[in-house]
Image (cartoon, rainbow, N blue to C red; front, top):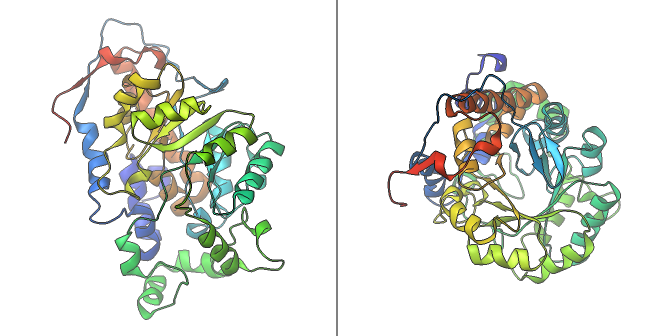
Length: 387
């Protein structure tokens, strides 16, 4: 199957599975511990059903959404994802271009392979930037300064990674620093010649270009990756990191990784303009609740004070619609976009984003929504207790 023939996000994942060696596919697809969080993220959507209204004129429908004073074509975007260039060289910039083509936001990770400068050059209106608190606050501040110089529309501070979770698939596959070419890894590469050819042509491990300026002069990709690993995560960080970033950043600031309504209130008190409610796609705390389940309580607490975004587990247009009904302004997509970029580059990313747009458009017609602002609590029911 070619990417143009993909019907849904499962088709996109299947294409990526056929293209990537297992060590790479599992890095994208995997969670932590027993991966209960991954399953919970998906099952949570099943607890909510959408209640349509009929005899409404839906011949003309618009998904136009305003986030932090800017208009986007749909109420979804792309979540930050690290080392996309490992799965396909140049993938970070490909995602930026695809997001701009469909006019949705793309949150570029500071742990990307391409630089924020390269992404903004291609998609200045659509590229947001994500940063972590680092062990050396000067690096965090310099990343913020770079975003300021580039007029990045929105800055995203991720706070849900005080330590790295136990990613068992990575451990079994040997996806760790330093990477070792074991016989098993070599055999995986030989079974996926298209990916392996691109990997070797790009000269192996890609450079984390956002971090290269903070390494020693002439540092290679491995040395830069080691620097990144020595600086993140920063388990000693506190609310002071939000205070530091808020003081340094004059534009809209989103805090990513919030799951508790009291933390959401604290973010607002310290000057955050929005939150990206997230459990890191099930890649950090395996016992964490699904973000869709905590969204209503956070919306009750701070929804009138901050713009609420959400990610983790969104695979259908109906998932996005449910989040809108429960108080989110937009949903952000991770794994399906990474799979699409790996399997088919920019064409793949455009395809998967268009799948979400088409599914949401059809659903709006079925729901009686002429625009996304029609979504609300009267359109959704929860049929079972939260587990």
